[in-house]
Length: 528
Image 1 (cartoon, helix red, strand yellow):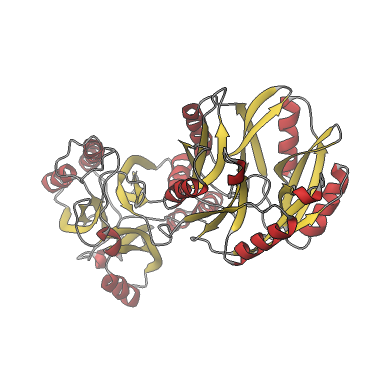
Image 2 (cartoon, helix red, strand yellow; image 1 turned 90 degrees about the vertical axis):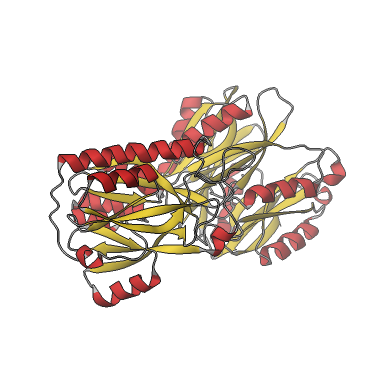
């Protein structure tokens, strides 16, 4: 939402409108300067203050780097990996919201972690508009967290925060207009995968004040569009909020049904319990073939599933059959074959509650060159159709597309040379993911293998990827346990994949800042 509002600011061209949309800013703790925050100030930013603040940003970055290197003895305790802090479980118990206010007079923000101060401002200072929680911190110290120090800038009438001891001491020594107010709350100097996320720091040159945001999307937009905001790096790492730290993505494995009736019963029961089918997984022992199901506890929903025998003979009749179900709100989740049905396919359709709107389908004969293939994908994507995959009847291969009434796109696509190792894939996928492109899967065009990436132009998104060895000889329980370890960290399972000539199978995991329920032939919950 904030990214869209940033773009609205660019169209409207108003400074105040642009600043309203910040997700996180200066604030926390109780304030001796809230009255000053409510006054209109014309801050005269001296060269001395600019120099001290520039040096402060350097000191803060250096201190975070020392902590990351394990050289800061006063910093957090570290895990055996040497990369992530052991954020004590107590941090979740002492987690508090840092609330945001927007100053309509000065176009700046005030933040506080004090409920009492929040309520007092709401009651007595109408110039400060309450905008709700911005991010989360800890109200108490523990071995994993450090104090964040608060200053009141009497000249500008705003507050400033730093986790750096060196920067704190520099400001006290060189900027007498900054009143030191002590620790405001507690955060981390070191990144952590499970409970922490970065707080990004900007210096607004024209105002002589700082701006902070915990939104990577907003930080990227500001870097691209607001030259007056000088990016100074990560300020520190704040706690993930309760919704973000929800039970997460939960997987379960069940024996794969062998008949259509059994499959209908299984998917119906699991859908009512909030689980949707992802994929079958074939273990080294055929008797271990299993069906894997998924539930997102951060966005709970139930699912209705239909499995229908479809005697279609070409792409046109396939699209007609899919459109019948799509008009009822059922998305196509791929074909399945049962021993009792011979060679006749059954189509699996799923409808989540809350729903995803009505679906419509189209199929176009597949081009034979990479350039023509990519052109076709982007032409359909511009019309709001997302690519599901190929369908083959007789000797003709067609590309199948789906359009949702509630997800207009446009969708854009990229093809890159296929990664031949897991490490190369991670580098490639994370590069694409940082630009909002999600991995859709490998494709073969004209005898050459490519990796396909898709982007939803209606949403600002970033995706991150990692891989882990998946042993096909493991039991279903072992595989599902591994999926749930990563699911608890917010990662979705894309599925199993091999790279190059290697016989090793890997699980691909990814997470993004938005997701949709798992629909379509692939198992990606982002729905791209």
